[in-house]
Picture (cartoon, rainbow, N blue to C red):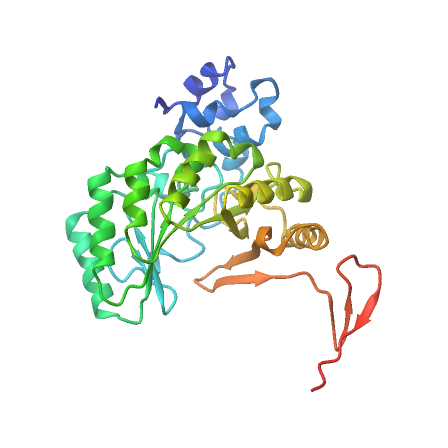
Amino acid sequence: MKFYTAGRDAMAKLGLEITPEMERVEPTYPVYLNDYYLGLIDPADWRNDPIARQSLPDPQELADLSSSYDPLAEEEQMPTPHLIHRFVDRVVLLATGRCAMRCRFCFRKRAWTSGMELADLSDEQLAGAVGYLTAHPAVKEVLISGGDPLMLPFGRLKAIVDAVAAVPSIQVIRIGSRMPVVWPERVTAEIAEYFGSIPGLWFATHFNHPREVTPEAAAACGRLVRAGVPVVNQSVLLKGVNDDAELLEELFRKLVAIRVKPHYLFHVDPVRGVRHFATGVEKGLQILRAFRPRLSSLAVPTFAIDLPEGGGKVALQPEYGKDGEYSDIFEQKRIKYETGL
Ligand code: SF4
């Protein structure tokens, strides 16, 4: 796989010329993308292309200088390096800062920033994390994230997962990885079979647009599913990329068809450098409302915001009524619902 570390080279591969405004973004937010994802861009309409908007630098990234790089206060919730402990029963373990692509909307964009880069988890840090988990048996679930843990060599990935799985109180391991979307071949049969051999292991990926559900991406998810690994998807609602009910309906139908459960649809976090992707919460509620009469609950994700200051994820639902009277899902009439209590 060929990787591009300069927007100029990536654009040239598409037969396009980069603009000076785009190049000015790169010292702050560098470019990193690969041939596979680049190949999904439509060069003829690249300025409006939803794949390009997720991967090519945009001058709007520099417009916001007042927002925090870490509004979720992750750095303050690390009892030991690389381990975020926000909720009673689960933690996040940051295995690496590397990804197969730098997604322009990434809420951990601070890890790309000079002086805040996240290195690979060292042996000493892994031992520290395992020690913490062992001392806190109330933690039952570990999300191994980053960056993208599948950037690590298989042996290192296996060493981390094995070490976490060996903690007696850990019941569930979730691998957070965008590889099926951005580098499907990296989800090798060897990795899929290994994940399938770990009891309680789930795989959470990140499709945002139906055009990302390519035969290659479907095959990557298929390898995981056939190996016995449940696969869920977490999308972000992105202005100009996927903020449209019909488009998201197509995405979620495609995912269910390849046995990937749409799990979350997140509103963009108020992170510096990504706020131009925000749609407003009301847009997400409108989309959810449009799904009600059209889309099976299997295909409908939970719409959520992740509150600043470590407040946690809050699921949001459109209002259908109260006090025993509710709108039908087609919103054509009000219907009484007596609980008998
Ligand atoms: S793959 Fe995930 S962690 Fe990496 S840049 Fe994209 S959104 Fe951020």
